[in-house]
Length: 401
Image 1: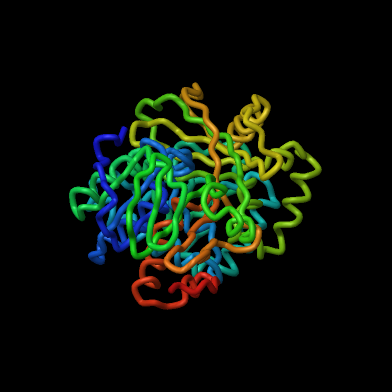
Image 2: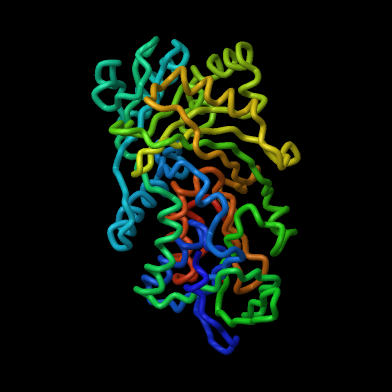
């Protein structure tokens, strides 16, 4: 896909910054560094970024973060996405989101969230009638209401990951080396499996789920592990737009923003008793729509040693069962199925480590890569250029030399 974007390099050129990984997180760092005039090299082991960065809903989802945590980073990412989309010609939509409630315990969580945090988040509780003014896809049967948030944004990740490298090459002369597996980083040098070498003053490793390849011990000590998810995409919905991102009550179990709600344990207990299979497979349901009209549906979660290479038909059936409860689509034909992997940490909200001078690891954004990567990239580059403590604003304490 991007072979023509790569250029031959004899190893004699000096870069200000090298980035390992051309997923959204790596591209975010490359853009923010290039904007500041740094000479940037990006190395990617595949022919294009094809990991978690293209296997997701395309949701920029600030409402899932906490005010005390990463919400400000998510909102910064939102603004940067809008800027990047305009400059790089990437379609983007300020679509907002709806958390749909069909059970009393779901509504109780949303009411509590709105009472405690609604003003800060800019959210609102709306009636079924108001819901249907925002989306034709909400199921009428049993709908109590929804939490509306206007902060969420939609971008097609497959389009973005393909477009950003060309934008960076044309606009900033960023060097990309695709189909390049980096096997060694240190002492101001990077070496690929085929023997090629490059020199850089600093290297940022954004290896995502492939974190075992470079500095594996540092990644292990940071508590990183992988999550596998299954997702679906429908056929094009003819003349049917779902509008905002849609989420069901099951999603309230998944996002940090709702964990402070005292009403949440009752919801979780009910789900565990009525539908323990949903907890078994980590299922919560959401929907987003592409510009072409397909609806992206998901998802499930398997962690660490639970992960197997085989996708389960049962997981797909359960996801569709729960999705049918909350949304209506003209065409439920599934045209694509896939699984993806992302890395997260059980110790830190975002992993930022310096395994040796001149090398920084940034990883562990988990399922919030689209939401957080732009803001994280901005933060890291600012800290590097300012020679400050890396990630202090994100609750990290890794010194950058």
